[in-house]
Length: 80
Image 1 (spheres, rainbow, N blue to C red):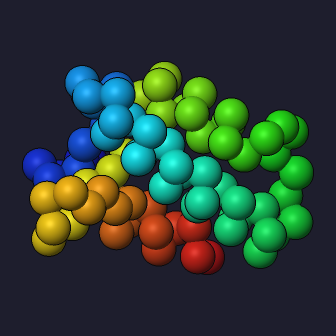
Image 2: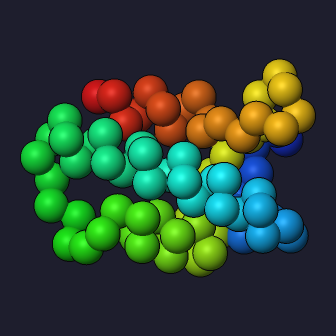
Image 3: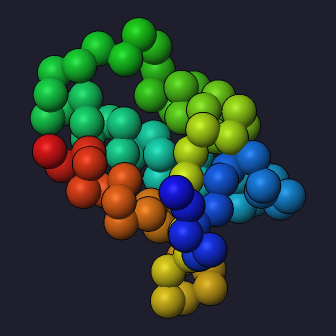
């Protein structure tokens, strides 16, 4: 269940915001790959951009309106 402050990447209307969300997703995937040794099957940036455009990435805004962060639930899942 999504909380009101968590957004799906398919709702992004601004291309600059899309790039910021995709970049943060690429960092998350890169860290996941390093920690687990998981082969993602391609370049992390391409995978992150594709997943963001498809609407598979959740994000939320931080205290600074220009700061986009991953939702807390997703961060705790990736650290397990």
